[in-house]
Image (cartoon, rainbow, N blue to C red):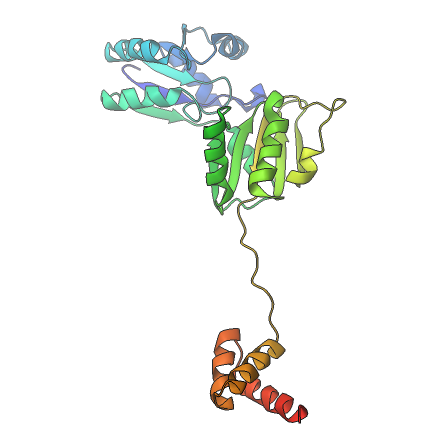
Amino acid sequence: MAGKLFVVGTPIGNLGDMTFRAVETLKAVDFIAAEDTRVTSKITAHFGIKKPLLSYHEHNRKYAGDAIIEKILAGESCAVVTDAGMPCVSDPGEDLVRLCAENGIPIEVVPGPTALISALAVSGLDTSKFKFFGFPSIAKNSRCEMFEEAAGEPSTLIFYEAPHKLEATLRDMLNFFGNRRLALCRELTKVHEEIIRTTLSEAVNLYNEQNRPRGEYVLVVEGFRPAPPPQVGIEDAVSEALRLADGGMKLSEACKAAAKKFGFAKGEVYSAAVEAHSGDR
């Protein structure tokens, strides 16, 4: 196995979710590029994988990425992993894949668990269309731009959030989105896994000094739903027809126009209008 990058998914909490193929791939490559070598070393130790771990994360990705590319071009094989789940999604591994593509290096994916898809699957919300936003920015302008964009999105919305930022994010979501359905997915696949299906307004009041958020969260939020059109009855169409007739339009033409406007049959509006007109005399 030489001169190739393997994008390898690892468990999001439960080591029992590690695939046979992922284990065999990590055993076969020359080295592993890991977001946090301390986290990955626990996985490699558990599965008896003895390969060099090279640190590759947000703060060193430029020079570490160049070093990895040099090693692969020299004929070595590399597996890139993240702390949990699929690398390259809200993760610096994205840059490493881009560099390999630019240098003509073959890339192979070894899929594994993902927190966002797992949360979506158990959310109870629409799964046919969804949009993933990652972690909300802590910068006020970027944060507002993200929530403003998401507010009008009809697809189901998925966010990641850390426990110490969760309460502020829930308040901001309520302000930008209004009171929508929400699934709070906490510590997925772990011992303290918890899925709370609620609404944003209820979620804002869920936490307090005695009940602090704990663990990593995936927030699955209902997409934008336009308000239903107001219900109209035949009396609305009749009122419109009589108003037009009082303005000088022939009753039959007035009923035709009113029927088209309110979605009724012309004959139905005309009969009701004649009856109402006769009753006024």
